[in-house]
Image (cartoon, helix red, strand yellow):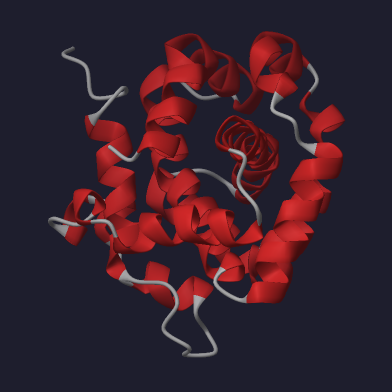
Length: 205
């Protein structure tokens, strides 16, 4: 699994999965499925945005100002009060007008209602930004380095494989994020959901 996703899923852990499920009224399996559907969309959207120099610069500035990754060191405290992470504001920048379509996708993929998918994305967005902030500092990444790291999520062979296994197996995920047809979102994003569920969350039952 890609280093960034591996780090984030390990930090969320089964305890975090349970806490997220409690917030949303889901059991553990439902929570795992929902996270596995939502995280690739968020990562894919950030990767797409960062492929343009102005997008990468904007992301680097936001990480420098507001996302040092500290909330990942107190995940339980954050999940008790997710509103402190300003997830809605982050989603506004990352997804923009595509947020309703992404929420619909997550709802359909994970069997959530609209409110649950909205809450889930708002909880995960600060965690994703926190993970990126940690990596930026640890690797001393500038905007170009961030773009390269995120671009690897789209292009890495480790995230490829069988797209039908990922995040509900729906090839329309590309269209959700790439409505302008610029080709920035690839089937690798779809494969990421399967990697998440098959990695940390794919334990024996």
